[in-house]
Amino acid sequence: MRDYANYFIDRKIPEKRGVSENHDIDWWMEYFVKNMAKGLFIVLLAVIFLLLKSFWQLGKSQSVFPVANIELSGNVLITRPVDVQKVLADLNDGGFFNIDLNRLSEHLQALAWIDEATVTRHWPQTLQVTLHERQPKYRWGENELLDSVGNRFANTNPLLFSSLPQLVGVPGREAEVIYAYQQLLQALGEQAETLDIKSFVLNAYLSWELHLHNGLVVKFGRDAYQQRMRRFAQAYQAHKLPDFAQVNALDFRYQGGFSVQWKPQFAPQSEANQRLVKVGQTRI
Image 1: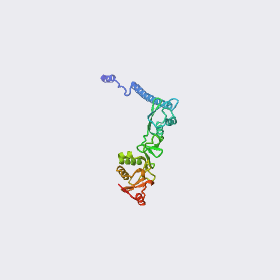
Image 2: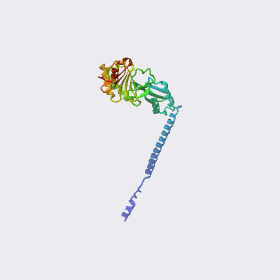
Image 3: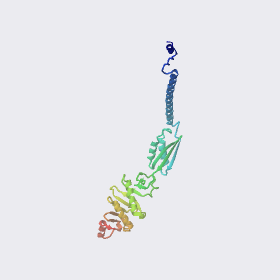
Image 4: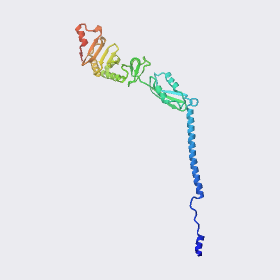
């Protein structure tokens, strides 16, 4: 009986299961630290956002971040500086960060001679403007120029470009006229330099003509004009054409030949010969 009582006396009461007091404190501290870190992070983001917003607002102000310098570079020979300055002055209506670079580039490219314009910012107060002018290859009509691919722009200095080949044509067909002219030059080869060409024309009837400075007109017509230009080149190279000083026009719209319109003082004397020249064909 004593042993049984001692059993209960000596037996230790097991500790209550659960979280210890120290463990509870650690858990609350960890929870507090985590939430405080999140709160600080949110506050930090808010501060950064406000700073950036304030900085951007200041950047819009010309008084705080004005554009003090504009540097021009590129191959600008014809475009007048006053035209470039006017565009820059009209669009420089904001601070360093507020100016619309794309809009500025578009307005610069709208100038007659500007082919490409690039505008970049350089901290703290400088805009770098790089301009590339169009390269004229031909005169178009009386008042315009063409580049190599047929883009049209104003001829602001006619005297300077008076030596360029003159092309005349229907608006919208600039590239076609350039191609046809190049085909004619290719057919003539080295002999092209001996022709005193005034202009190469696609008239309102879409008929092709070559005009020389002495007034002679060579007519190629609308259809098969490339073949007719080659026949003209072959006849010219073979010296089978009449003296240009005696002729007003050569008409190559005939199959395999051409007709001649003589100047009055050089026209054949007999009536039969006159009819023959007017309606006949000279074989080549």
